[in-house]
Image (cartoon, rainbow, N blue to C red; front, side):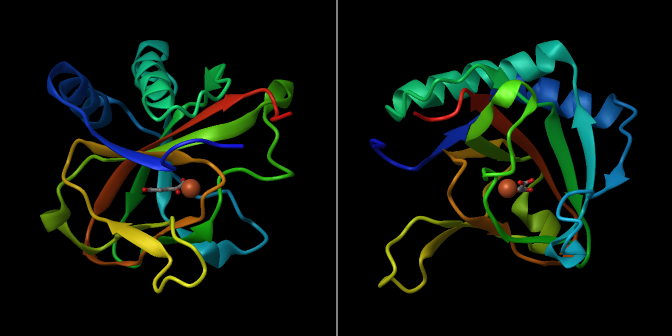
Length: 186
Ligand SMILES: O=C(O)CCC(=O)C(=O)O
Ligand SMILES: [Fe+2]
């Protein structure tokens, strides 16, 4: 049984946002092509880098825990994966998927419970690239809500909710993604 909303938008401010700007602009990021979904290479067209710095991940961990309480999800969250820095240029996209799945146990048997995507550049820097989250029942058309948020806004959602990034048709869309995990549901 789950309680409350399945997603929550939070605006990040001040020092946190500055730290994000510094980290993403100064770090020597190893941009790599997406390795996930090798079975269907077309599901995702983007480049990724991973931010592993403990203090950086801790900032995201703490805010995720706050959202977990605020939304009354009360998931048992024990860890956070390295933060994914995603870059979607012209034609970049990520089709419908969920971040949690039967084959997606992490080291130690944990599962993803909360996902977060943070918009780290402004919507006027790219066309397309909307983030859709399937929040509504089958009779609703469309079943999803569309988000194209300003820089510094993050959307937190339960990791079993379907979502996608629509194709970018010009410019570059940049995001940070975090996954919060804990012991399997019982
Ligand atoms: O880049 C985004 O906003 C979302 C990416 C995503 O859904 C994922 O990496 O699982
Ligand atoms: Fe995802």
